[in-house]
Length: 145
Ligand code: FES
Image 1 (tube, rainbow, N blue to C red):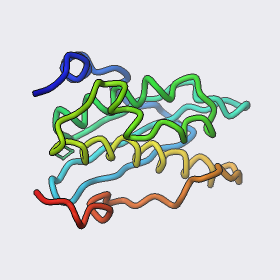
Image 2 (cartoon, rainbow, N blue to C red; image 1 turned 90 degrees about the vertical axis):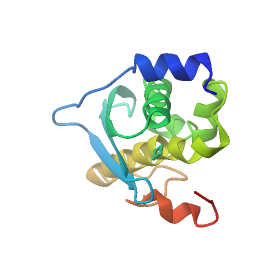
Image 3 (tube, helix red, strand yellow; image 1 turned 30 degrees about the vertical axis):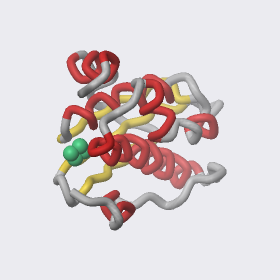
Image 4 (cartoon, rainbow, N blue to C red; image 1 turned 30 degrees about the horizontal axis):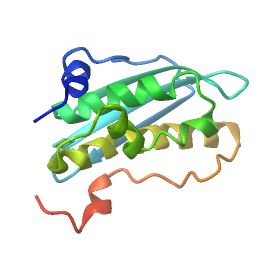
């Protein structure tokens, strides 16, 4: 039911850990499944994401999507990182089973929360970035579990 890429990123997740004195950190959870994701960003003076780490208390799909999402934002500017949507991450993983699509939102939202934290600390605006929610299940009232 999972693609090879999902299994690879689940079994060998990239960028697991934390960054001390990160430029931005973001934590989001999904109250429905109880999973939590934290993202740390190290951003240089040119607003390029030099390093990124994640920690999750989440399911396999959350691990795989965070691993891929962190790979995709590394080396990008904070503005370019906004293009790494959960959809883009799922495509890069060759898809996720429909019931697991919501898991991929944890990574996207946690990255946004970390970018928001960075933007606030530095007094900058990142186009298209909205104040993150700490509980992403608010987004998905229409979904069934
Ligand atoms: Fe909660 Fe996957 S079941 S993130």
